[in-house]
Length: 374
Length: 219
Image (cartoon, rainbow over all chains, first blue to last red; front, side, top):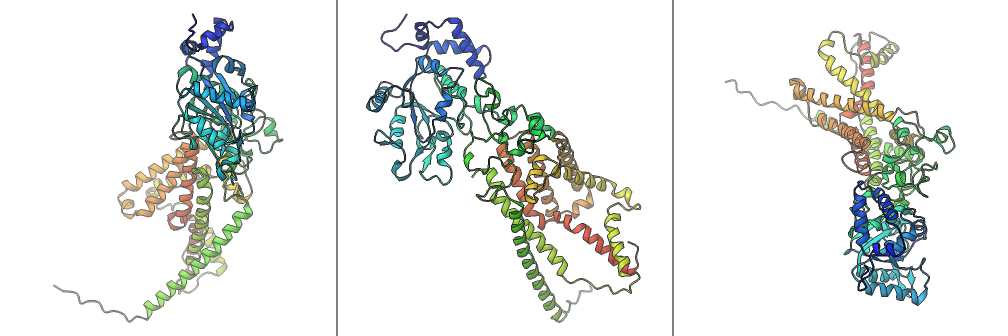
């Protein structure tokens, strides 16, 4: 029975749209599997999801390329249409919404007023803070101003993509716009980082779903990422890992090793230092992921990945300064300089030692104290 | 800048400079300090003495038959962990990439599992070496800070390397940073401690062989 005084629950909405009980349970089972929950948790998830109200979601975009939203719209489980029509109430997204200009801004303000303290703020992109934040303006206001206003009444902030999570490309050296990660600008709200360039669509959708079903932010790692998706390194879950263990590496992109599917570690793969679900959830409905397609992991889900030298420089490569990987010539120059300095110090210390010996030899021999013969 | 970037960046650069500078400094010292003249009448020619010195670098690497019963434990432990270190340091794929960056060449690696087994054996031998040093009444009295700290620096490198390989203790990135930092520490300590024996051992054997042969003693 409906409750005219309250907004409909997700279960009521599904009933209204004619979604069968079987379909709903299949959906919840798939979600429980995606979230790595035990099989029995699917029932609890279904119960929680049916009785939950759709949270209002405000989606803000700042310094970004819309790649994260493009990724989000390719979610297969849950699908984007299922998510935004049944699980959440997407009240503002200037890219997806039909309204524009003043009408769009009114929709955002209306949603913020109606759901103050309860709505979910999803942010895509870093926020420029340099020169008063003038490098990103919408509706005559700076991005920093909009973020501050929207974050004030939000229950939690979900940062979608590496730019929102860690600053990403706009934050990369020399960061001319003073771009900053959202977590540094919203210190008083729970922040969830869904990093990746872009993040895996199922990870974005799954994080939102987990929040809706549990009513709280999920367990997070040190970088505020949901541990359920970012708990393992790509290297640990990579299907090429056995080749790493056997010491079989592709040396170039077209050698026998590359054609045989050997490990891409020597070609700069950042899998061992990157925590994400690419190797398990994969992309495009679990068809493939970059390493499976023959390209090393770039480490896009980690902080500062743009500033860590060449994508093709192996992890153990020494890096001296901004030039990136050390070249033998550079190492030789530095070694030569150090050797000259060492020789000079050695020569100096030898001369000092010889002077000391000469001084010692010039001294008259000291007579020893007469020993007590008692 | 995170721990790995610091360890393989400025810290490694500084350690590398100190390593080269220190080694050259100490070698120059040894070469230019005054040496005692050989006052004995030359019994053998310079050529024969040089040849004997060269031979001594190899022959002195093997225990003398007369003392082998007393020195066999130390010799066996020493040789075993040196071979283990050689394999772990030079035949592990990530290490080959690391050292290859400096010299512009790479060489074939052993499978990781094989290197890991050698690393575990080497670490075990290292513990045995320390136990022997502490348990042996003469060795214990001969030992000083240099012996223990040199042991600690190499053992730290082995332990952190094994932790990075096994992904235990902390995220891989953190352990990798600590592992590279411990290598930086090794480079800094190398010229000033007993690890410097790697540069001294063969030249000193050659010089001893030369001097003894000139004096007429069999080397």
